[in-house]
Length: 403
Image: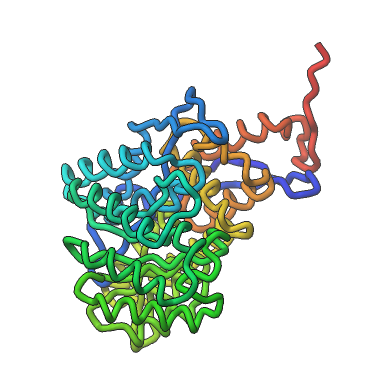
C-alpha cells in the first residue's frame, strides 16, 4: 500500500502506510430504511476562477454536481445550499439560486432525495424589520418550491440581530410556516457553527430556547416535518426527541456524537443530516445497512471511526469545518484541486490536514489510497516539506531555490 508522511505542529514528519478500504465506493447502492439520512454537500470552485475573499463564487458545476451523484449513488440523500456549501462564508445569493436549480434538476433525473436551504441571506441590509425577515424567507421559500425541492428553513442572522425574545421567533416562524406548500425541516444551528446565531430562538439558555422551539413546532405542526439539531449537545437533542409530536423527526446535526444519536437509546432515535457523512459516504451507508438488519455491533464498528474523523474535521474553530470536507473530497478524487470558494482552503493548518488523512485512513474513508497518497505528497511538496530528502522519514527538510 502507498506510504505517506504525516506532519505535526513542530514540523516533525513520520511515515505512515495507508490501508485498503473495506467498503468500496460501489459496494452499497441502496438507501437505508431504518433512518432518513442526508449528507450536507459542499461546492467545488472552478480552478481558474477568481475565488478569492469577497468575490462572487465561480463554481465548477460539473464537479459540484458529480459529487452529489456520488452521494446519491451511495444511497444517501443530499442536503444542499446549506452551511456546508459555504452559505454566509462565500456562497453568494446568485450562486445559491443556481445551485438549488441545478441540484434539484439532477436529483429528479436520478430519483435522488434532496432538501435545500432557505434563508434570508440575500438581503443587502444587515438590519431589517421582523416583517422584512418574513418577506425575505417568503422570497427564498417560493423560489425553492418552484424548483420542486423540499425545504430546510435555516436559522437567519437577520432574525438573530433584531429578535427581542421568544415571541419574535414565534411570530416570524409562524408566518413563514403558514406559507409552506409542504412540511419543512427547521434548523437549529449553534454558535459554534456561526457565532452570529448566539441566543437563537430567544435565549442563550438552551433549555429556554428549546421551549420556544417546541412551541413553534406544536403551533405549526402541519407545516413541520422535522428539525435538524446542530448544537453538539446530545442532551438537548434527546429531550426534543422525547417531547416533540411523534410525526416530527429530529435530524441529528451533531458531528461529534452522531453514532449514539442515530443508534438511539431504546426510547427514541435521531435521523441524520450531517456534513460529516459527505466525508465517508460509502462507510456511513454500510453502517446504516447494518442498523437496518438490527446489527448495532457492526453499525458501531463501522461508524465510530468516522466519528473520530468528524471530531477532527469539526474541531474548533468549528465554522471552518468546510475546509476538511473539501480536503477529503479532493483526496478522494471528487474535485480536481484543493481549492474553495473565498479561498477558504487556507483556513486549516497542514498538521490539521495531516490528522485528517490519518483518521480518514483509519475509518476506511479513503476511497482510492494511491490517489490520496499522491495528492497529499504533492501538497506537502507545495508547502516546502521535502520528505524524500530524509530517507529515515524523520524530520523536515525544506527545499530552497538558490537560482
